[in-house]
Image 1: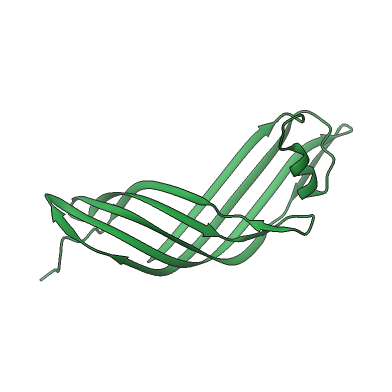
Image 2: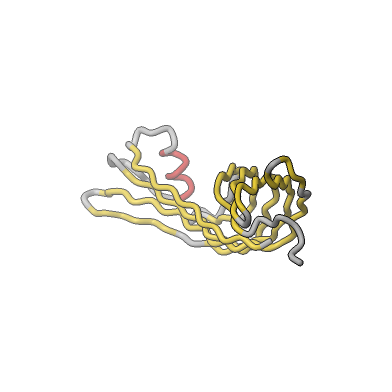
Length: 154
């Protein structure tokens, strides 16, 4: 199994937000102005094994589990105004990590299906304060799949 994925998040926050002290600590910054913004992205390529079992009840149903190694690039950033000057602190970290999970794929047409999957991933993310955290997440994916097999091609 090979997977390419990208996650992103942007939030505009007021300085009295409960997360402000955490951002100040992570980025070694003093955020005294209102508002500030936080951006984050994770891009990764994953490869590994997937075990699935196929059965038919009017359609193809494939429950599966997987374990993947991943090469991830994470990039957190904050932007804020400091004494009339716009400040932007960003960092980018590349790391090796892993992802594992389970899901079920429903083949609604030959070679086209829909799926739901739960996954946990780990990718090291280093902040400007020198501390490392997990930049990946626990996720639920819902989407379309292609090349769902209806059996051996003869």
